[in-house]
Amino acid sequence: MPDRIGLFTGSFDPVTKGHLDLIERASKLFDTLYVGIFYNINKQELFNIEQKERMVRKTVEHLANVRFVTSHDELAVDVAKRLGVTTFVRGLRNGADIDYEANMQFYNNHLAPELETIYLVSKPQYQYLTSSRIRELLAFDQDISAYVPQSVMNELERKNEKTKTI
Image (cartoon, rainbow, N blue to C red):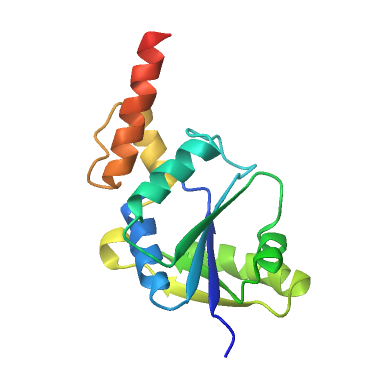
């Protein structure tokens, strides 16, 4: 039986407790789960790819079968083909996510019909967590610690210390 290899992608800007929950749950379904940290041209990013990877790595270091891939200029389907991925893993929080993901799956199926997509529904306590909302709260100096893993708080502290020394 071939290895079951999943790919869960996102911009993770920043990673949230909802992302962490989905990664933990997905890691139980695959021999190897890649977490793909991708650049999103439609978003104004708070963290660069290296910072995001550091946060996500620290957050999921307890999961032995999780690997990482970063990309700034590739489609997820191309990365998936290169890595031998069998299944995309996507999270669903609400109806808007269903529409967005159905559109994405349409194109993914056309570009790589051999790849399957599975959806994990967010737990109720995470269904309203979005990185965009977290960035908005940060812009207004609000405490986000209830919504993000400690690695994000550490990275923000590091970022603030760098800013103070400039």
